[in-house]
Structures are given as structure tokens and as C-alpha cells.
Length: 213
Image (cartoon, rainbow, N blue to C red):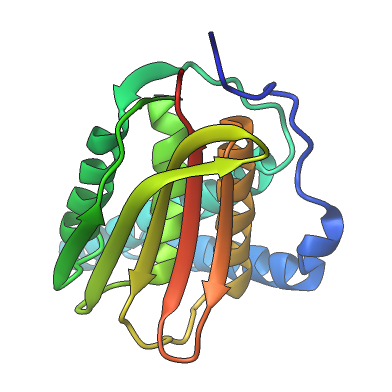
């Protein structure tokens, strides 16, 4: 029996977004794209400059595409293709990603939970990426506390993620908030919950996913 919510789950309310910040970030990304496109055109006679401009143009294009895709995915229907996997494998994947892609100095896992979760691997990976980026454990410790839990009479696994990293200045606040909104929508489509518990010395996010009976 599938435990996933309908793919027509309501998108985040518009009051969660800072429209002016979104427009400002879009303008910045477009300015960068225009600058490097002009630079590439003007540097055809200089091979080194042309290579640099080409790389930067490619990066600017990728950044703009990622921003727009995230913005659209906060509202358009998302279809899930679930697969069954042990909850322990999901925890291991989070720990590996934190060490490898996020540069956490250490990752500790406490507790554990049996059960099988039904997840769309690609979509949940996006959500987990946004969660880990929000915790930003670069050079710091990330602590995972795993255990069984219930929400509304339904059983599942709860993963508490806590980062020792000090708060850092964010380059693009609106993009971070968009990714967080999308993460919460993806988790909701999995009939789960994700909540942030900001603290004075660390940041904590609690992820809950239902397990199959």
C-alpha cells in the first residue's frame, strides 16, 4: 500500500516568499548572464579570455536555470515515482552526502529505526540537499538522532539533524528560502513532515517520514 500523498499537494502559500527578493535575485542572475555573454563575444581574439568567459557563461546559465526550476517546482504539479528502501539506508545516504558534498568535518549517528520508507529518490534527494544546505555543516559536526515516532496515529521514522556550524551570511536569501519551501513540499508529498528548530548555538531540523506497515 502506498503511503505517499497525492502529487496535487498544495504549493506553499505566497506569503512565504519575498517577491522583491526573488525579482532582485533574478535580475542579478540575468545581469551575470548578460555580462559573460558580452565578454565571450568580445574576447574571440584572446583564447585564454574566451575560455574563461565560456566557463563563466556556462556557470551563469546553470545558476539561472536552477533558480527558475526551483521557483517553478514550488507551484507546478510534481509526480512521484516511489521505491521502497530501508530507513537505515536513507540515514546512511544523508550521512554520506553531508560528508562528501557538504564538507561536514564529522557526522555522528545515534539510535536507529526499522521499517521501510517509500520514496521518490530523485525528489527526496532534492529535499535532503536543501535541508543539508540550510544546516550548512561545512567544517563542523553534524549529528543525526534516529528513532521511531508517530504523527497523527501513523508510525514512521524521525531523523533529527543538528549542525554545530555557526550561522553564515547567505549570498542569495530568496534562493535559500525557495529551496526550503520546495523541500517542505516534497516531504509533504511523501506524507511526511519537516520542521526547523532554530537555536542560539546550533541549527536543528526534524524530518519525519512514514514507514510501511
